[in-house]
Length: 536
Ligand code: HEM
Image (cartoon, rainbow, N blue to C red):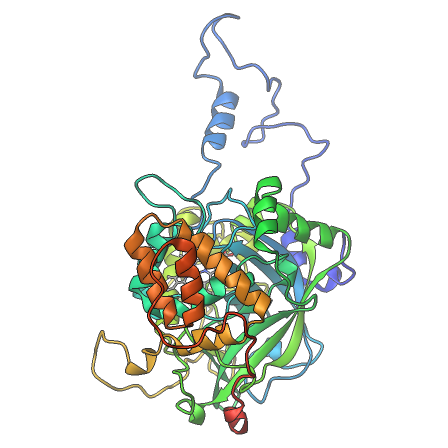
C-alpha cells in the first residue's frame, strides 16, 4: 500500500535508487553474461560427472552457500516497517535537535520490533522483553532510539550483559530451552543478581506477552540528555505510547498462538500496513532539570529504576506512523544497524553505566554481523544527509573516493572534508564536570533493588497479580534445581510475601517467613505525588 506522503519521504526516495526490478529481464550471471541453461549443470557425458568449468553453476552455488549472515547475538527475531515521525510542538526550550524544532516537521523513520532471547526462527508470542528500535533519518544525520517495551532493565552495569545473556539464552550443553525464562540458568542469574527484581516483575507480567507490536509501549530506558541552543541541559527519558493502547495476550492464548502461528506479530504488522490501517505511537518525554539530579529517592542514572509518571509527567511531543512495509526483509530488516550512540546535536548521554557500555557493543557486533567496516553504506543504513570523511577502503567498500589526499589536516588539497563549529552544526559533547577516583565499585545510590519492584506489584489489579503469580509458577516451576527455586521465592519475598508464598506453594518449596500481610488479592493505593512540585 502506497503512502500519500511517500513523495516527501527522503529515505524512500533514496531507497528507490537501490531497488532492482528483475521481471521480464534476461537471466544473466553476475558478470552480465546471458545464461542459456539454468537447470542442468555441464557434465562430461549425459550421465558423467559435473565439470568445474561450468562457471554459471559455480557462481550460483557459491552465492547461495554464502547467503546467511550471523543472526544478531540478541534480538535475532525481529520485524520492521518504514514510516515517519511528525513533531507536535517545538522542543527548542530543551533541545536544539533539528527534527524537534518545528511543529509539523516530518522525519522518515525505520522501526524494528524484536524478541530478545529467541533465535531468528523462534515463535513470536513467547514471554520475553520486546525490542523497540527506531532510526530517525534526520537532516543532521541518523538518530537511533534503541529501546525496549519495558521501562527498566535487568542489570545496572554493561559488564554484566554477557553474563545475563549467557543465562537467558538456551543452555550451552544441550541448547535448550528456546524459551527465555523457563530454565535453571535464567533463574539462577536472577537469584544471584538481585538488581534484576524490578525488571523480572515486569517480565512476569502481561507486558511480556503483548497482543501486537502495535499495542506495545516503547521506552528508551536510560536517562539521556537534551541540550538546547544555549547549552542548557535537562535529563530526559523517552516513551512511545501506542495509539491503540497497551494490550496483552493471556498466557494460554500466547502459548497456543506460538504453536499455531509463530509469525503472529509480524503478520499483524504487515497486514495492518497493507490494509492502510497504519500503526501509530506518540513520542513522550520526561524531563528533569540538572539541578534536580539528586532530588529523588532513587538514582536517576540507575537503569533498573523508572521515573514515576505521577511525579514526572510524560510530555507528548509527536507521533510516529508506520505506513510502508519493506521490499526485502534481508536488505532492510536484517541489515539495519541500530546503535544507541547514533545521536544528533541536542541529544547526549548520561553516565548510566549500562548505557555507557552499550555505546561500545553495537558497532563491535555489527562489524562481524554485517561483514566489515562499510555497513554504513548499505542502503537502509545510509543517512539522508550527505556524509564525507577520510575513511577509506575495507571489505565491501562501494564509494569511490576521489583525489590524492585522505587525511586531516593537510596542505595539499583545499577541498578535503573540514570540521564544523557548533554554530555550523558540528556535534559538541556536553561539557559535564566529572571528578572522582577511578573505581570499579557501584554507587550506594544503586543499591535499593526492591522499592520499585514493590511499587510495580502494588500498582497491579487483582487479575494482573493473578497473572504474575501464574507466570512465576509456570516459569520457576520448570527449574529443576530445588535450591534455585527456593532462592527465587526468598528473593521475591522482598517484593511481596503473598506473591512469594503463592509461588512457593506452586513450585514445591518453603514460603518465606515474612510477617507482612499478603497483597495478592488487593489492588493498590495510588503512587506518591510528592515530587510534583519539582517538575520542570
Ligand atoms: C540489540 C548489546 C542493553 C535494546 C543488541 C545487539 C547487541 C546489544 C550486541 C545486537 C545488535 C546488532 O546485531 O545489530 C547490548 C548491551 C546491552 C544492551 C551490551 C547492555 C549493556 C539493551 C537495552 C536495551 C536494548 C537496555 C533497551 C533499552 C536493544 C534492541 C536491539 C538490541 C532493541 C535490537 C536492535 C534491532 O532491532 O536491530 N543489543 N544491549 N539493549 N538491543 Fe541491546
